[in-house]
Image (cartoon, rainbow, N blue to C red; front, side):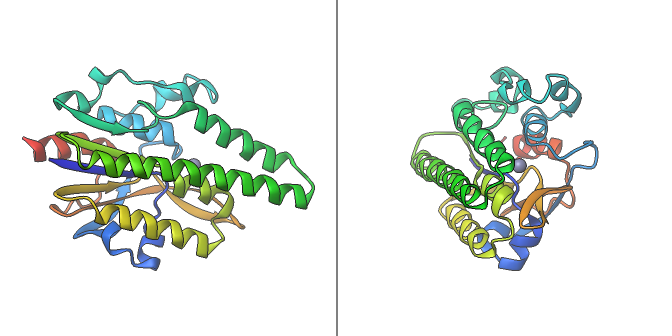
Length: 237
Ligand SMILES: [Zn+2]
């Protein structure tokens, strides 16, 4: 039994800076995503779950339609399990409405010129992201008690909050601490994996050009995100 804690935009340098021991586990490092032209969430998770570089296919859908991607179960490595539990993963089964809301508020924030109104929009944006995170965390912890042969929980909070608040170290540390605590509650073999990290752009955050991985069972060097299919399947035989 293996559990994947998939964390959008978990940044290697912040895990180090905050010294998050559960996120780091025994072995940790950066993933190599240099085969992709840009570190895009939908492209990277789609490539992860299929074990193939899906960039061309996903980008061909265009910026808007891309977010509606639903890769059929049979095309993912999840189909090798009898009773997998996959929670909120982009490109597979994540909450489209929630993501729409995030994107709408983000757009509103950058369109707005008035500082006071900007603060209000950011507050709403943050509250919306934290509320979703609480719900996902609860469902994930519940699933840990279930009869599954594979569990994957996807957590978007570090990415969503990071885009507008990356310069707020207190807020970012609070999120990393919470994610660290979630990992500590998982028993057995586990992989923490991010699609890409995050770098500061003024007070905001943008995707960095590598991801983060950690395990409590194996040194992986500098794996590609498409390598995890075989890493996971070989560990669960
Ligand atoms: Zn992002």
